[in-house]
Length: 124
Image (cartoon, rainbow, N blue to C red; front, side, top):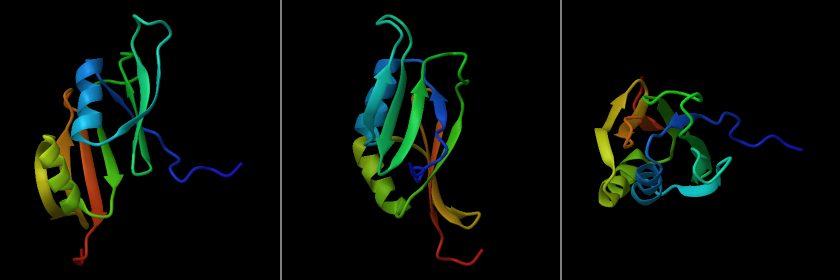
């Protein structure tokens, strides 16, 4: 079986299932791939995907702590910035050209950072 293109799956800690699910799906355009709970009243572990990029969101306190940072390599940061702003996302750093990338940073409801980056056309 061939390996998937994305071979690392980061997990971010969430504390409020309803707020986080709404933010990732409504404001960021991710789709819920699957959700797992050992019982209906227990914390969720879920997968969300967008444009072939997948991350895990977990309410389990032993998995990781709030305050993570995930980098996404994308084709057009400025187009995503407009889309995310139109959707009401919390952009904490507008598009800029740092470290050889065009990038912007968003914050989820728990303070996790999502950085969207595209290779810059400017020389480093």
